[in-house]
Image 1 (cartoon, one colour):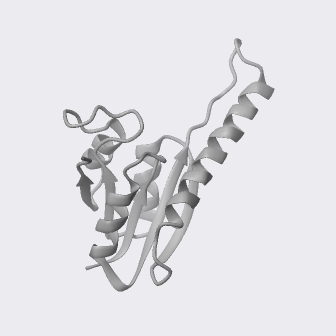
Image 2 (cartoon, rainbow, N blue to C red):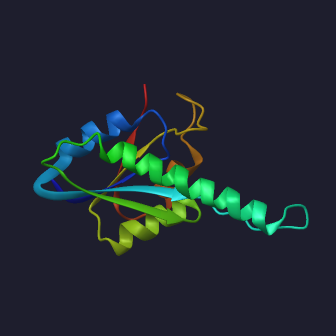
Image 3 (tube, rainbow, N blue to C red):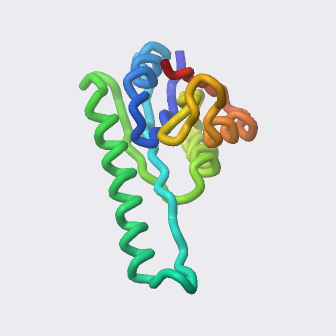
Amino acid sequence: MYKKILLPTDGSAYADEEIERAIKLLADDGEIIVLSVAGKLTSSAFQSRSNVKKINKGLRAEAEDSVNHMVKKFPDDVKVTPMVKVGFPAEVINDVAEKENVDLIIISASGKSGIHRFFIGSVAEKVLKTTEIDTLLIHNK
């Protein structure tokens, strides 16, 4: 059983499978951290700062919605900590996993933009290649 599990989400439809696995692997006094990573655009010559600011605000709101939606699916007796960060998803996932001293990362093989059955999603692949923490890759049906 794992004491602390990191469960990244991008708001895709695979959360139910991830939640089920996380609960089965969680120690009785354990904690699950539900993490969503919002991207961040920077302004350029082709976009105004105010437009970029609005887009970034929307990306953050979407990440918060993803986390809140997933957290609501857990039973009340499971300790769940919601977390939203900004940055590159694989890097942030690995940073949070290390800083929070998680024992296990559970991540879907494909998310919003993944090609199902044939390829591992780019975020999941990068996490698998760069972390030293146990990682459970969920193959979605």
